Every structure is written in C-alpha cells, then in structure tokens.
Amino acid sequence: MKLLPLIVIAVFTVSLGDAFLTKGMKQVALLMDNFNLSQATGITYYLVSLIGSINPDWAIYGAWPVLTVTNLNFLLGLGLQTTFFILFLTLLSRADLSYVLPVTSFSYILTAILAMLMLKEEVSLRRWFGILLICFGVLMVARGESRTDKNVLDSKVSEGNS
Image (tube, rainbow, N blue to C red; front, top):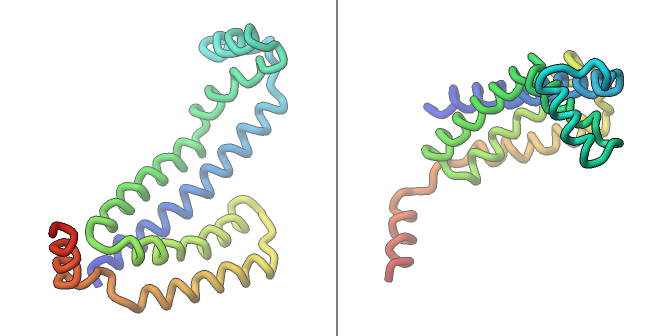
C-alpha cells in the first residue's frame, strides 16, 4: 500500500501537534493567570490598552495573542498541524474521504498516550475502551479499498451529466 507511509506520518503529526498545542495553551493560561498589566511593553502594551479602552475588565486579554504566538510549544504544534493538513489534503487527492478520515483517526491512540506522557493526564479505562472501540471500527474500514472503483466512479459522473 503506497498510502501507508503518508498515513503513518499524518497520524504522528496530528497527534504530536495536538499535544504540543495543548501544552502551549496550558502554559499561556498559566502566564495569563500571573500576568501583571503594569509590566506590559511593546505590542502587548498597545493590545492591553486597546482592549482596556473597550472594557477595563477585558484589558488582560490584550496580552493573550502575544503570549500565544511567542510560545514555542504553540508554534511547534501549529507547524505540526499544518504539516498534517497538507498530508491530509494529499491523502484526499489519492483516496476516498470515507477511507482517509477513519484511517487517520488511529491518531486517537497515540494522542491518548502522548496526553499521558507529555501532559501527565490520566486516561480512564472508559476512555481507553472508547478509543479502542473507535479503532476497531477503523480497522474494519481500513481493510477495504482506499479508492472507489474507477469504473463505478465514471458511471456515476456520466449519470450526473445526463
């Protein structure tokens, strides 16, 4: 199967991307909780001032965009998610959506493992059971053809044109 390497890379990039985005956003939330408005400088100061002029209670949210786009984990996660999207589009150009989407959902297993290792999350037995149930369904889908038979597809297209 020539799609297998793309699928494996896509599964790893989406899972790692999710984990890094989550880690980065948790760091941003922690920084937001401890953020001192009087120490805002540069673009953060202007965003804090702008949003504070609309509603003083919202001023702190002016720091959120700067804290987010300067977070290394966020940027790494964003890069990995972008890579996944490009791979996903490539897979869609070569196989049916009804095949690609379920097969890439194998990332649920890897995402749960990364959540435990990188984010120290506790994954309950109920969640594991649900993840494995989804993956069992994915195995059933993955054992089929990755692309609709060209003759069937051509006949459907010609029916639609008449």
